[in-house]
Length: 114
Image 1: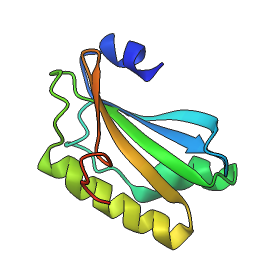
Image 2: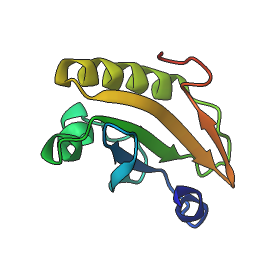
Image 3: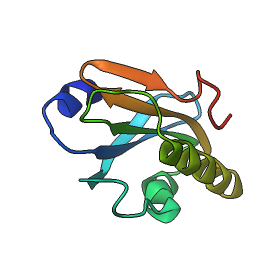
Image 4: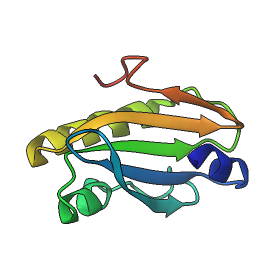
């Protein structure tokens, strides 16, 4: 679903996918459009929907319009900050996915932050 949307845009986009205790998707929210580097991603905004709907966990996903799905240093730093924020809120961050040109990468699978 997100790959199709990401393929049609020329800028970065960030989504939060909220999951219940059985890890079923209960909400998908688009948070940012544009360059993520130019505006800081706020943990409060990332977790807001999850708190409102009592989600057990989230998956963060964002697009790389270049098609390169390798995480940047900034992606790794952001992931670590959001994992820590989620621990305080008792909302697990299951993964951070990077999507680009029909491909994707899991930061969790690469052990970047977990």
